[in-house]
Image 1 (cartoon, rainbow, N blue to C red):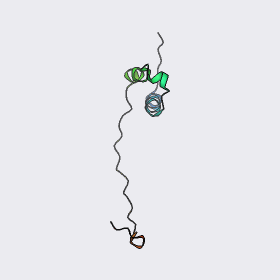
Image 2 (cartoon, rainbow, N blue to C red):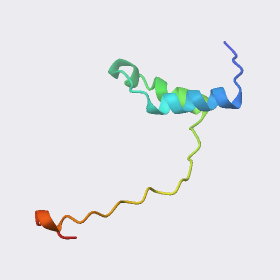
Image 3 (cartoon, rainbow, N blue to C red):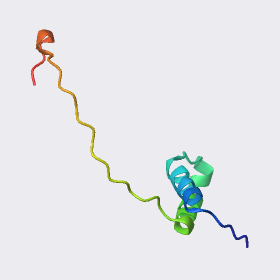
Length: 65
């Protein structure tokens, strides 16, 4: 068995990359990603303010809001 030591920043990088990376079908079928997520954990959810949607006057195009 191998043992690895990561800094908090390295672990966060691994968690985010594992969550966002596409998984090839043959690996996804073996559930390897979920086993890895169980070992290193999920990345923390960061709460941020949603972006404000801009308002545009589109009435000259026949679009009313």
